[in-house]
Image (cartoon, rainbow, N blue to C red; front, top):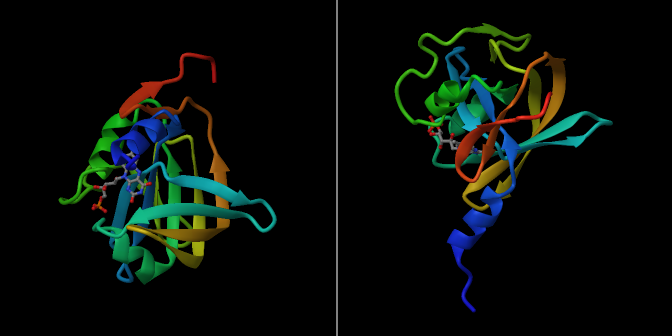
Length: 160
Ligand SMILES: Cc1cc2nc3c(=O)[nH]c(=O)nc-3n(C[C@H](O)[C@H](O)[C@H](O)COP(=O)(O)O)c2cc1C
């Protein structure tokens, strides 16, 4: 039986995730970012994270410029921010509150936390690449997460 790519979308859509905005910058310091949920922690010793970035994303080349990224974990009231960073084009940072991290990469305000990483390895992953980031700094803050499930933004109903 031929493989149906839509079925893969449907089944992975049932894998509920949090939502992040991954930010980076170019060598001149200009900020870039994209919404991502293909992210995971990889190792505690040493502390490593994995992010997967589409080769077609405008942000794609800038990870290679700086070799740095920040994973910003979105709160339940940040669906608009997620939509903004999931749309190619324009200046995504206009009107967005952020500060610069130790490595000069944007840390978004109002999130549940962030992790700043240096890219130590990049692997091929079909139409994406897989960046392995070594953690330089991590900060958790309180709040409730934005959730993505079956193609829609959701909120947790349980107490977080
Ligand atoms: C919930 C959600 C999760 C996403 N996860 C990823 C991801 O893990 N990696 C990726 O490259 N794109 C992901 N995308 C798509 C990008 O956010 C989208 O292609 C964006 O327009 C890229 O922006 P850019 O072209 O300005 O870099 C996701 C989109 C949404 C809405």
